[in-house]
Length: 310
Image (cartoon, rainbow, N blue to C red; front, side, top):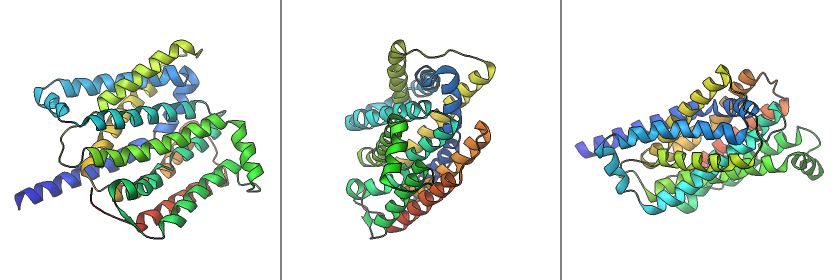
């Protein structure tokens, strides 16, 4: 009985941490875009992940108890989820940094926020969750929300889509790869580690991301316009990155994954609001409509999915 109660408390705490991660992620797109404008997407992201990795590694390595948890982590989690984590971070930061302007950075960010729907879609084959027919229209509505953003609310033709994507296709593709990577990461973390395994490897994943970025920055020409504001944004985003992704990793292993996937549908809305305020961008009607359809479609997907065996 006591074991069941403790397990329930652990699941509740992990789920609550996942909700906190969703709130913290609301600041990611705004800070990422501002930092990229002053330092470049590679150089700026390198410092964000370096700082977050250093503090994360200090916390993990300072005690033998924390270190012992790492030895029990499955290799497929360390290498498989680690690769997806690094890939997600690189794709997201590059996609937002490559946006032609601040308005487009919001659109790129919204493409990335397809990951809540993708978590549910991937949970069916990976976690053996069950899904009803509502999963198809829910996913279609979410995709149509992105369609509206990409077309700018215009004629909604394939010609319009091609024109908008051709203006900055790499940024759009990177944002899509980011969404796919995070959908897979969130499910495979649950499958390969599960609720009974203590500890996670997020600080090491962040360190790997930092190493990859600093290796790249020698081959790109980027600005180095440091200021007190930029330094503050780097520090703030480093805190958000370490805290949010550590909480999410734990939530995916021990929390209510279906509920968290549903709750994460609010992330694009919260992120859009924060980004518009912080970056002084006036959102277009199509952006809000697309965001609304994305949320509604993802909610339908959530209703369609019931928990299976992990």
